[in-house]
Image (cartoon, rainbow over all chains, first blue to last red; front, side, top):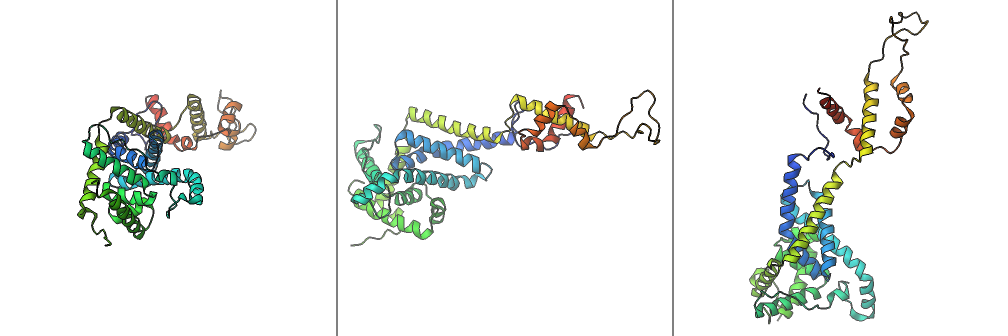
Length: 197
Length: 142
């Protein structure tokens, strides 16, 4: 007698269906490809390494739980959307202190966390040439100093290669906002980085 | 002079910035790699555990009780005459049986089973009864 449709759950003694194994392997491969860049996104938002790893793990878990059933070609924008949401949440938690700094005159027009805007010393790694290390340090400092939304727009457009529409979907803003944030980011970064890069 | 960035890729410094970002992300850092692997696996395992049917062993007893209740419920009510009813005589040698409705049968379940049924029930488990009924048949060589 053939089995009726087995429930889509794992029993203590029954293995997962093969398609679930394949999906898990595909998800693992996707996350492995994206995790380093995602971690850099979070660190550039002013999070320390341990906090950044926590945020990344939360984003991975939320992404897998919510979207594992979606087609693989949709995973990239969905994952970045989840990660950006987690970043905004983390930023809001820190903004209580930032608002106080804003009140006493250290804020910026986008309301980003003033603490996050302070440049941190960069650690580009020993493998890079001296000139590259200096350039990387300058780049990191400049990116950290950007407001959150400008940095998001810059990294998603330039590093991830998303077009304006996809960037807007990931950031949860309009395409016009993406262009505005990106324009401001480029103006600021060009001023700070042209002599280094 | 106000420069307006048209296509970002026209600016050399932007290309250089992108290259630097990529180089940084590709740097070999075994400790970081291990940490990332751990976090990734935790996220995938937690997600898989959350999707799975959590079946602690006592719940298997509940499943068994539900199967018994279902099997009893599915049995056709014996068409036997009630003592003194005149509707067919009692089967020779067999005790007189009272025809009970499924609800009556459920209400006469042993107290322990009833308590289990009325307690916290995993609704996903209840929905999968058909599967477990089939499983039961397989276990008995059906």
